[in-house]
Image 1: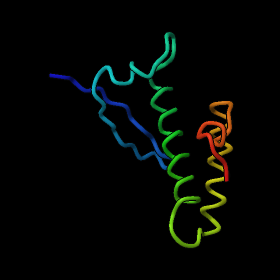
Image 2: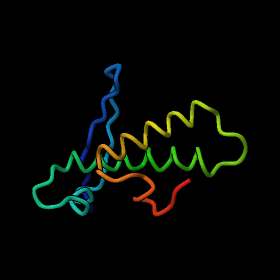
Image 3: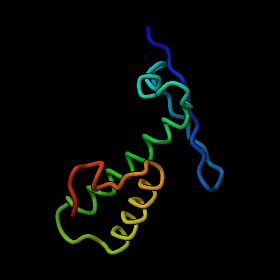
Length: 94
């Protein structure tokens, strides 16, 4: 049986949420010497960037202006963290 390990996310107001992952799964995405918690954070940033992109560019109907601004900021944060743009990472641009 696979055990789990817990990572804790803390919000700006101090609220926390525990996330359980199968023990060893994070290690699959971790390079030698890399902090596993940083890998989990990388995946959070990547996931939010992808979801914001989809909601902004691939959803039906009019995109609210605030979503466009949020997506643009998320793209900036993605590039700051990973050193490449979302366009480069996804292989397409809008």
